[in-house]
Each structure stands twice: as structure tokens, then as C-alpha cells.
Length: 380
Image (cartoon, rainbow, N blue to C red; front, top):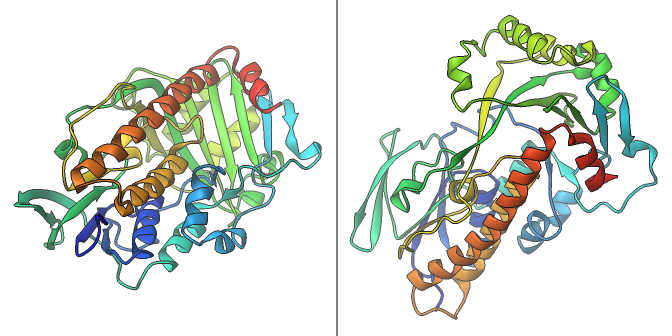
């Protein structure tokens, strides 16, 4: 049976996974709404660029009929990597190699969001809808939002990311700390604000590595750059450090100490950061997580299988989840919605566990003394 017919579907979370699912379901006649806590699409700064993979993110866009829009918005050359050691020596430069087949094209988060939003029916996304709670009402759910909105849905999909408020309605399983914390920052107008790093970046990506630390820098189409300093810390380091991450001077002082043996060119990032730094302790869901399926509630993306970003799989997995969940819900192979959700979650967990193990191996390797050799073995 078709498990979306005559059902009101609520997707909580308007990231790439939630929006992709909404698009795929609407293409097949679903009555779907996306409830997003941001007040509008421009409410928060967008992070680093996204590299979409052929068998996941790009496949989802293909099925959603959005490849023409993607091809008009992706950034040729933004996938080219420079591996640079802590002393600012270029170890590998993809800009100097013959053009590779583009298997992981880069797109900025803003344009990808716009492509997905523009593909939806007007009014699909309900902005300023910060989820508070929900209660089961027979075969449905009653959802309550901070703005006073109350809605009834026959099916709910949690697409609300790393700190999902809906996940506890499915399982009490919590993620474990990866051992690494990343500090995110950005520089606007990098060509003038941070000229040395802008030149090193050359419109692509930098993987800076040394002494078990990383500094990953990505260019953006608007002329800015985003960077992430990653290092091994205790789980509660952000709180225990006493650093006020809204105070550039404090963060710069920390960086000069923590990365004291790195070339001074890297300081340009922290000296010219354009907004508050964001500390991000990195977590990962257990590889063996499992739970009992529910008949009208499931999840996708980071809400289901949070993991660190050091394998570039997060957005791709979320979009693949959206594609596969839509296919299961439209399938005629299952007698009821609960068995449909059970089948989706079973294969999703297997796939996510495999990627999570690879991601944790990559996270450890990139923050080890052999980091450059490890990355060269993958890219070089």
C-alpha cells in the first residue's frame, strides 16, 4: 500500500535532509509540511561548502529532478584540495594536477537550500517553528511549538539535526564523545581581510595538519572563507577552558598557545574572523545502536546517526536517508506503515554504522602524527 495517501506528514527540521524528503514526497502527492525553528532562510550564517557524492547526495537530487538547478549553482574548482603542513609548506596541490573527473562537486549551503526551497509548494516550510514537545493521540501526534503553534500529524519525521528534540521519543540512546573538538570561524571578504590565506586557499580547500591538530579551510562563492581548527580535548574542555568564544582576543590568545609551533600565517584566520567563534565538540552515535520501530515516527540525518565531519558524509547521508525513506513510504511491498518504517530504519542503521566506523577512523587518523601520510594515501 501507499503509506502517504490521505496522511498529514510533519517533517521537523529544514536542513538538506528534511527539505529533500519534502520535495520527494510532494512529487508523489503527499500532504507535507516542514517545521523549521529559524525565522527565515537567512536567519543564520551558513557553514562550509558541501561536497555531494554520486551515490547519495547527487542521487537524491537526481531523483528529485533538481540536477539542472544544481549544475547551475555548483562551484567548479572548489573541490580542489591543498594539503599544507603546519609550517605552511604545500605538500599536495590539486590545482597543479590534470583536471580530475568531478565525482564530488562542491556547492555552498545557501544555494543548495535555495534549490530545495524553490522546488517546494508555497507555504510548505513553516518558519519560526521551534519544536517543544509532542504527545500521541491515537494514531497521530500532536506537536507543540514555541511560537504557540499546535498541529496534528499522522506521521512525523525527525530531521532536526545533532541535538534532535524528537529523537528521545524514539530511543534514549545517546552519542559518545569522539575525542576531538573543532572551533569554527569565518572571514568575510577574505581577499582583502585575509590575503595570505586567500591566496593559499586559491578558491578551493585547505587541509592544514601538524602535531595532531588540523585546520581545515573552505572557500565560498560569496568571497568569504570558513575554517575549523580541530584538536584533541577532554569532553568538557569548552566549559572548563574558561574561554569566552565571543571574545576574539581570548580565542586568538588561545590559538597562539595551542598552535604555537604553527606558522604565523595561520593566525590571519583568527585575527580577521568576522563573527563569534563556535566551539563544536564532536560526537558520534554508537555503531551498534538499535531501537523498536514506531508506526508513525522515524528520523533521518544527524538526528539518527550523528558523526564527526571528518569524512564528508553528513549531508550526503541525510539526503540519502530522505531518498530511501521516500522510496519505502511509496512502496507497495509492506502491509503497514510500521513495517515500512522498520525496513527503512534497519538498512539505514547498517549503512550509517559502516560510515560511522570509517568516519571515526578518519577522525583519529587526521589528528595523529601520521595525518599527512593518511590524507595523501586517500587523495594523492
